[in-house]
Image (cartoon, rainbow, N blue to C red; front, top):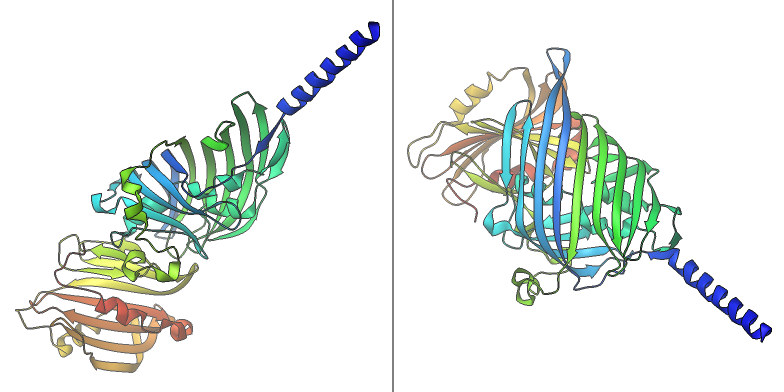
Length: 445
């Protein structure tokens, strides 16, 4: 009898010990499946300063911004690493307010651009709308909030006990930090607490990388909540202190950003993401219509509009000027300036002689050799003139092309392209393609 009691006691102890041991560990990972449905709410708060040079002096100008994004999402396919490869989203809300050096800006997503595809590509995450080209501001709204495709890859996908740590995968760090290229990182995760329903984890460390050709260094502190029922991250608070050097398309900045993300599973598929919507979207990047991956620009005064490739970045604008820079994987290739020109009578245009006379007054431009001079055939009743010369601008060896484009009703713009001479071989026909895309006065749907 005593032996039976003793053996029974041993069995209970072993059973309870095994149960406690199982409760002390958790498989911390996500199994991504096609058809997963989620609702996201993301809030962003940014504070910091922009560092600029004026009159030989360094100035720090205040920056602050807030963003709010609500969207429903359907996973179309996992990627090769087990993360999320492609999703279809419908934005219920996507807006931001910012104040840079006292200048206030508000952004919102156009009603006909709320359907967005986010897809992993060889150059990061590609965002586009099947309804047509986005503006640069719309692209920034949907592409520069926290990259939710990286959420599964932040986790180690293995059994952990409280206090266990892991090194976050380099690809996850690159996407979470929105880097075009990752230089190095030491971001580490830690399982902080296990309860019957959830697991709490933290992420901490630094990361260095390149974005738009500028070097950036981030210090990151984040905390997340993982649902044991769904096997998914349901909440993440991500804070980063961000120091960025000046780049070819962006100023130097020092900022602190905080992102609060909540993720809720959906029981029913939203009609905006239904089969008839998603079945019309190619899964291969090479099959995408060009218009989906291009960007669009509308002159605020309604004078002209055009679409352009994403290697061009708008870096400045005034009432009469638009300045764009051409970058290839962060490297500066050239610059384009589109200038509103005086309107002519219908069917008329400024003469080449008058246009050349204006060019002679350009400051700090010393032409040395004319490479091209004459009209170029174009379409839609337009007239196009170009003069290209090799010379020095502000002492630097460059090639400049000056275009004058006139529409059938006398609308005119001048377009100046400047390319360093050592980049001339890479220029190709990028300038002419951009010029030929301009329409008067046109709206792009």
